[in-house]
Length: 392
Image: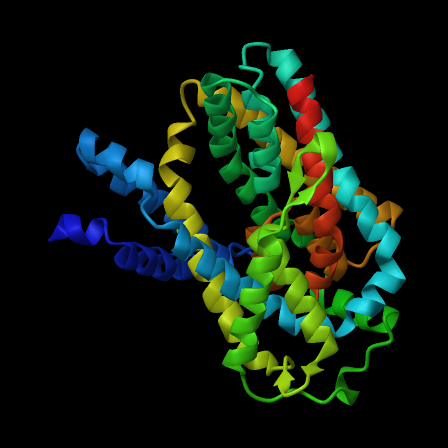
């Protein structure tokens, strides 16, 4: 009975989510993890469950994953769909006012991570070269980057090294951006309310003059997910660079922002209650972070020792340098408001968990506008820089 409960996805997700929310309520001065606590409890439970099983069962679970890919995608779709629809109202103003600045971060942030990974790999010397593009893609949580790295290596051993590098780099990449969204406002004394007010003034937004949409529309919501999934599955040929697709995150985000901005299409109305979308967003992000932790917990903790340690150092440094450079360039050179910069940093890192932390730390769904503006450029940059790392 106990073994069945420990390997039941429903039990594990519920336990990781509930314990994570309890952990998120702990405040150290002004810092708290909030919903991101589910990531940490998921990591711990994912490691704990695997290590308590016999070796033969460990291999079976690791090959299949504690939680299936479909659950992972569903939780991601709920979160991204709700965020996109609730933040779509001002998309045109954001792009018109900040377009070039936001797009530049989509190049600067991945470039910084790639240069850091390359420099450290040369300095450390002992890391298998094929694993470096994988670690870089993991540090910036980029599945298209991983695909590009796999396409440009030859042999099963090199492919395994790429995959191992990605698995090692993914969790430090997630943790870095999640903690940055919580920690940067404290370190640099950024007042979310004041930043939100300045954001509204910059875009000439009067919240009191905007009629609030009522109710939740399941038909339109799930239509966004269907259309977004189809868009994300499309592969755009890029010649020698391979193929590029938006994936589930990019597809649903794009469709949600566009249809949310348009509002009505015939009998369909994509404008929904902010309160209802906020509830779905919260549910989606807690489920998503729990699933991420459960799926990667064993690999992440196991990589702290042995062959994974040098890659862990590379991935962590790559993620932290990308965030640091992106923040200082965005805040002090480009003069971006924190509401948009938080979303743009997460978009440049192609980090969906980071977007959840950004929404929570700012208390504003409009961070998704910055995320959506940067994300496509960041994806293309990731593919290019990953291929360059593979070649070098």
